[in-house]
Length: 464
Image (cartoon, rainbow, N blue to C red; front, side):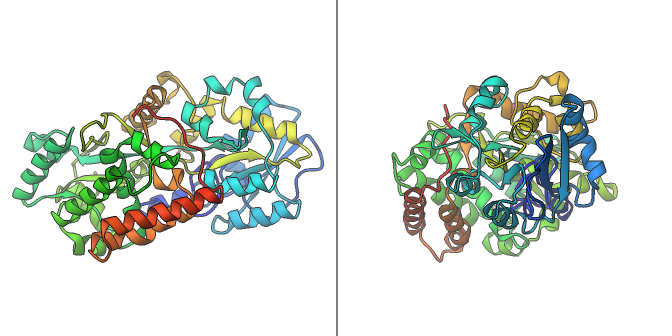
């Protein structure tokens, strides 16, 4: 889940500090996840349940960014916020909604999680709200596409992130290296690193086994490419397509070449602190992961006398026909309005404010208690206190969103069975216990099942 969607600890977190911080959310996050209070009977009161982004912020502290600005804009409305532990919030919310005691603002851990809530009739159609508030010109195109389920706008993404290539900038400068831009330059760079005793990629999933899923999404976008992924997600081609198999095969080959963690065995035994330390010390040169890493890298770069600097670059295309500058998109949560809310207008006003108030959004980011929402903004909106590398990454994602150079990740664009299959089986491919062909066949079977059950999230369009 993401810091603006509420719910359990996020799956994709690296450092322990980051995990604690992301345990929930900053805005809507949590925005709704508990089972303690019924929707407000007073139409002026909007109820929402949330898990603090930092894990220990009080309602008052959280309210500085998430309540006070809204009530200032809508003085006749009041927000009743309830703190809820993140671990079981999604389940609690489902029980509460079924009992008619759910919050006015409903959160979900992602689009696929929102589908059952919509099918149960819990989510209000926000189509008119979107028109009244010009969301088509405020919310990023792909995010608005994801908000629709069966033609109704019901679940808006509350956060977004991407997969990128992080690298030790100091190490690169000392050796005259540049981030790779294609397969040939990556092979050359990896070879030069290994010749110097440097591991090309810091990696390891000893602390968090599903981390391999990030690499699956990376190779699918770099090798098969977003267009083929869109075709697979929409059922135009199967997940056994040669482009998909080539992606998984290249990933396996690169593991066997010792690019990741120095070898397959090392990958499965390397802990998070080890891989971050290796990257910061220059024992490893690069690291493939998500936007969520930016908050945690500072604990290693600059720590204990380390003077090295980190930087990031877009993932390079690794096959012919795959464009450069593509950003795979991940969503950490969605926000909706309870269809049975007695405060439905003010609940809609809350979401309208959330996606309109860029100043409050960036204030949350600067204070370290939230992430950007998938909305358009100007560079001048970003406070000086936000790390320039952080601001540049989100600006790049937004530019790519406008250009349609966007890709897909397993935890946002697949159904639950498909994603679980990837997590449960990709390590078997890496260690040789399962063939690439069998993996792709199993994934296709799982995806067909998700599709038949209506659990595959809407597919946003790509020009990649």
